Amino acid sequence: MPKILSTLVFLVFALPLTSSGELPSPYGPDDTLGAINNLSPAKVLAAARLIKTGKTYPLGVPTGPETPAYGPRSYQLTVTQLSDGTGTPLGSNKATGNDDVIYAWMGVGSQIDGLGHMGVNHVYYNNTPASEFVTTQGLLKFGIDTLPPIVTRGVLLDMTRHYGVSPLPEGTAFNQKEIEAVARERGLTLEKGDVVLFHTGWLDVADSDPQRFMAGQPGLGLGGARYLAKLGVVAVGADTWALEALPSEDPKTAFPVHPELLARSGVYILENMDTRALAADGASEFLFVLGAPRFVGTVQSVINPVAIR
Image (cartoon, rainbow, N blue to C red; front, side, top):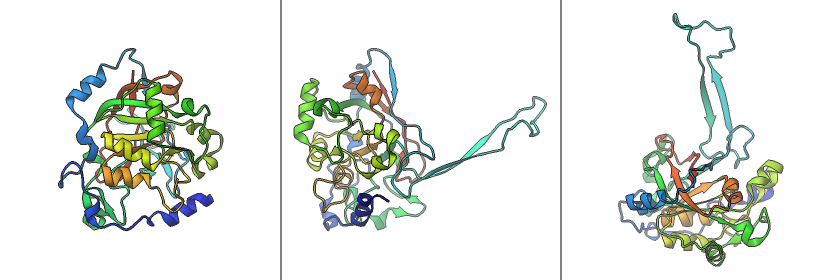
């Protein structure tokens, strides 16, 4: 395991202590959906009007046993009822077929982190202690299966264009100043209910050097996370495996952006988003569509959102 990852694992629960009174939801004491509350039919209609060419972009990466993943996450698939041409067909029509079984962590490849993924000192979104909803058979709250479709305006902020380098170096943290600068350069105003994606060029490193890819990354800083949450965005994603800058801005913290977005603000995290084609086409806004898989009680899930221009 790379040194930085072993350090992060050691620190992952070393965030400042909190009481259950420090993580109230801005959407009410009984809320379980977080910033998804900022979606609306009007937002969907407005986002649909962004479609001009009909071109679609898959934002998920192909997921398999070689996909870089945060240890010990892994993926394995077994094809059953092997149809290699020697089995006995079914019925007079001689039907044949295959099934498959996946043994995989739900946080491999392109994924959404739900509100039960990370908290502060075992307290999660909306002042919910882990003891109230976490079981080994699944989450009793915040499961990915409970999410409605996320259909809204997507915004791509190309950080490689802003910094003039691709990929951005490990540890590069962008915050409110940089986010506002890129939005201004593209003539964009970030809005409540948006999904904001960052292009850093880092996904190319997964192809050329998987060990380096997992050992650090450029990404969102803590101030940038607070800024986006204050705007009311639904989700924030990037072409990196953990969204946020690693090493962190403050080396004493571990994954500080995750609990800031998930536990404090109810903002979802999208990881390993393949933004390369969108960036190559100079796209800045589009219709974003995600129907998350409805596996009951899941903390996170492999996804393939679609951008439509």
